[in-house]
Amino acid sequence: QVQLVESGGGLVQAGGSLRLSCAASTSFFRLYDMGWYRQAPGKQRDLVATITSGGSTNYADSAMGRFTISRDNAKNTVYLQMNTLKPEDTAVYYCNAHSHNVGDYWGQGTQVTVSS
Figure (cartoon, rainbow, N blue to C red):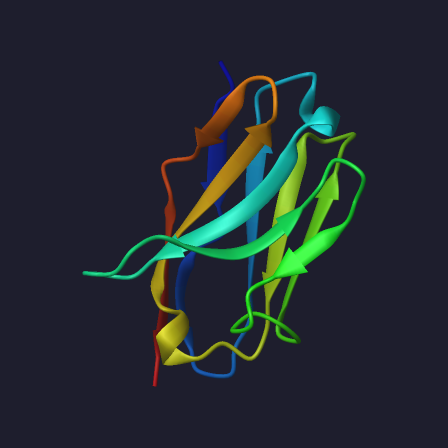
């Protein structure tokens, strides 16, 4: 069982920045593909960005050029740096850990609210 704990959410004005962190409780963190997803009220949960165990990244079109996903395997932590935030970025952001052998784990989510 892997526990994921997100932090760093909050209220920010449009144009501002936030850095989300997700700490994983596994010594095998380096083997997991990690991702950030978000869910706005009344909408489905959507992919924001992913980073593989090898460090390859992938971004949703809405995040491209504004968000950066990174990982620190020594700290068992994945980050999401979000710049130039827009009101439409308002959502609960969830951390995901994926293993082809084990499956998926999710964090409890952290709220990001961007005011106009």
